[in-house]
Amino acid sequence: MPPMSYTRRDLLRLAGLGGLVLVGGGLPTWAADADATDAATTTTTGFSFLQLSDTHLGFNLPKVNPDADGTLIKAIAAVNALSIPPDFIVFTGDLTHTTDDGDERRKRLTKFKETITALKVTDIKLLAGEHDASLDNGAAYKEILGVPLHYSFDHKGVHFIALDNVSDPAGVVGADQLAWLQDDLSKQPKDARIVVLTHRPLFPLFPQWEWQTKDGQAVIDALAPYADVQVFYGHIHQEHHQVTGNVHHHAAHSLMYALPAPGSVPKKAPLPWDATAPYRGLGWRDISAGKPGGFNLDEEAVHA
Image (cartoon, rainbow, N blue to C red; front, side, top):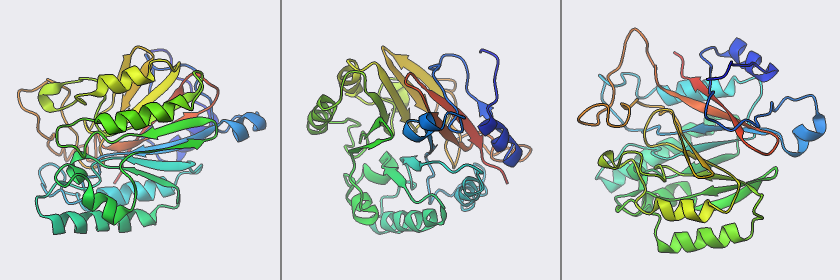
């Protein structure tokens, strides 16, 4: 890992929160501070957004997280306290914990919707996880939250694509969405800066634990002609970075519980709560975009 450097933005955040982890080696190198002194660059291209993932509202297992009802609230308070607010916030799926009871699923989605109204940043992008959408093909998710399962948008010169690889219980994107993706991408120049937001990893990280998208290679192939592609996903409840061709993939921490490294144990199970280091492994990601070529990823911890 190369030596770490701290921008004015980093120092402000360290002073306000502590627990900052700067992500180093193996990532793109064009990172730029959103508080750069070049005002023109900041106005036209520099911005940051927060990625939060796997809040699992409705989870209840004290040996894994005795503060299951309070962790998201603490994270919201910490985000609201940031001295430099992000342009927007994205939740990359598993907003709620799975339940076979459709009424309970709607209650949990409603509670999530009400809880995040406490965020001072009002531009919030949502994605479904399999816990939210796989049992009813996303019907309750769309009904309660009022957002589509896949969509795209542009922000300050970056094209964002939110993909659904969870509402089909087979764990695929599917032919219809792939056709939509190809049409969406066809409108972008080959030098476009593209960010893909999704829940499951697109590449086969560890298929034995369903840490893959079965037709994810088709998505990666569709992205291959574009030189500047970043994918931000959740699902695996830990930081992880992978490069497939020209596509850079980055997994985020969960806000409810951590999971073991892929294949490190015989059976996937949440890591137990450590009373000596509460909230360890839980947090969110602040992503700063500047000049073309990469992103600066700062992992933030949840604090009591």
